[in-house]
Length: 397
Image (cartoon, rainbow, N blue to C red; front, top):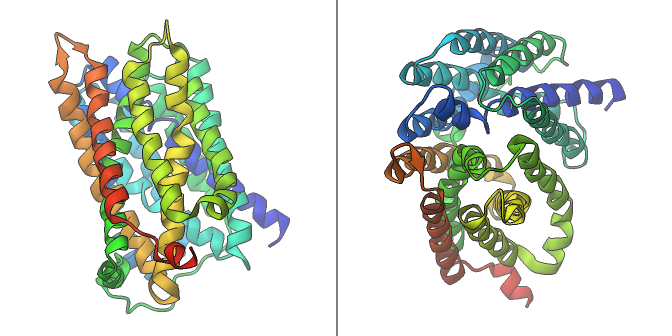
């Protein structure tokens, strides 16, 4: 790959995650503080991303991949998304907000697949070349959340205005990306597009347990994305957005440790470590305080890298190994649809219901709120320990 192409792709990833990171973690604070939304309205707003993740494979697989160049589709979607964000930023009603953010996420979600397609189409060896390009997205998330934190914009409409501007920039920039023409095969079935060809993997009990666990652990994951910012703010932590960016930094560090951990621990132990970290982090959020015990909250933030990398990234590698060459793409598609679509959708809705349940006279009982995802993560951990086994690992032992 040419260095100029590599830089183009890195800028693409940076702009895409800059747009996403500017509002995603802060949206709940904006809704609760500025629009005075209920917990249920906050949960509904976060379910829009899951709805978009469910519909995106159909859009990309049935339309974009068949008839249009990927970079042109990305350009149009981001310009349209910027227009929607302009109208969203004028809105003051939390009920109407749902429809605006739904329209925007429907435009944004296909970017995740389109950007990968554009990047990998230029690569001879994606396993070696892709990580250095993808990591710029994590860097962008860190940069934009720190900008928002330093400027104290977390509860302001500016978080969507920043995303609007970067969406327009990415939309225009996309038309100058390397050409990624539509795929020649237009005969893929809906079952192939959403990964149903991988259902035969469920004959393996351990893979089925992993699949169910992946969906269930996305429920507490949604609690983190939706509720961490306002919870930490209410605990009197200062510069919340800046401090939460340490979670993305830890994600980069633990990503680099995965090869070593695979050698030392194996699949099952890595997945268990990830699940244990989920339980610990929610207990930290429940019992930490921004005044007397901020270090406990910091543990919860920094554990994000262990939670995400040791379960989700390790899970993607495990899925790739289990599926084999013929259905590995279908298997990854099915996992993505089930986790980001179904699991996080349930979690987003549940998080809003739980917040309302533990809110009295506008005061949120965050300790009680965080015990719910901690309990769910604990149940998933027990389920996983009892029923999952890595046959390869057992055979080698």
